[in-house]
Image 1 (cartoon, rainbow over the protein chains, first blue to last red):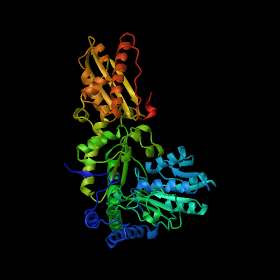
Image 2 (cartoon, each protein chain N blue to C red):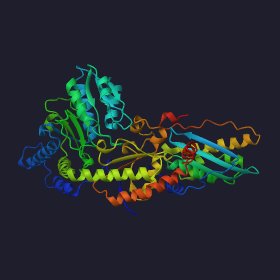
Image 3 (tube, chains in turn cyan, yellow):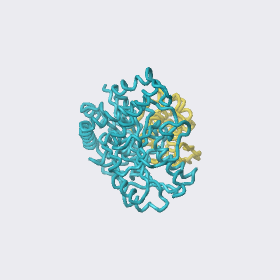
Image 4 (cartoon, rainbow over the protein chains, first blue to last red):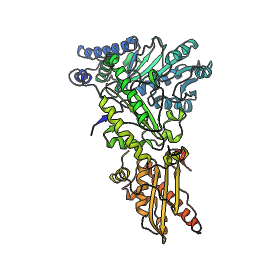
Length: 396
Length: 143
């Protein structure tokens, strides 16, 4: 039996080369960067180098990069810090119904606890925000728009450039959660008029527990974590030096590999999508196709089957996949993203996300295309929903 | 989700899957919103459940609960089958995660509905159905 990992959107393994770069900062180069002696300066320099690596990958300046403990922390900081800072100018945040919980739950907190107003934009059937909806939602009290760069469940890439241009024209700040997109797409924060951007190290073959908030020069947010004077006094906490070094190294490597890796993943992704749709009757692809989809994302719904069933059956064949956001695995509710795309409850319950990565091969895709149709057919044969569906569709 | 070996056994190799043609009683519980639907078919002879089959749309614990429940009532009298509780199903599976206990309740409810269907078809009165507590994490399923 093969072991096939297809949950790269949940997390990636740390690249051994990245780990090797990190190791000295756990042991011999352990100096606290805030200390004044020369030994500590090695730690400071390592952080500066990582800041440069991240800045270069985003076409930003190093003074615009702030290291955080995760992408979720960066999301929280961007939203809470902006709304608290700009309270006198306005109290309105616009985001979307399909954001990651790092944004959605923060927005709900700001709404319910802090009394801010939040508009949750709908999306079209493929998960795309419509510019006209955004424009219509803007008021003179809108201070921040937060739209994810690409969706973590269905992989749809948002029209970030036009959104950024509209926000800049209206004098509204624009934040994007690029946790899924940063390592897979070329992102130029200046060209796209992005004011704030969140990313996470463990989605790009770097270590877990690391993140970044890009903050356009001149912008001031309320601090999210108070304490010491680290990160130019804007994000307290002794720096996770090894993690920061790992994130910088991982991002630099991802960008260098992108010209080869992106077309490779797109080809594998499309072969998997075409194979599933052709081999499994009444399979539905969720999300956009082609250039509007993350290179590594596939997401399907299979009428008549519940998602967990598929995951466990695939696991018994050595395949690791997901039914959506891994963060929602403790919940019984169907994915909020799939519901926002207009799927019925039963189709949303029957979703399967397979996300590809550096370790994915043609042989692995072949293996999935061999075992998945059998699994779907077997479970459908036990399903009263499938039976009803067949009756309604003349047994086809 | 941590499932017991018995849950995984009944999920991977479910017993009594299928339909019974001309079933004496059919019961269905759950709804697509919850992601669980159980359909139970009964064949009754001389007041004994001679055969029972099920079809289930749902997660591993829903499939395992259906499988175990059908095993527990097979060969029992109709009255004994009625008295089988969801707790008995969960215990026979060596427990279910708390968030998934509603699956065993669905199995009990589907069996009760099938038995009442059988009773009505055979000129008996339906037994008053109790309130089945499907109250769990998602409010829309608290029917």
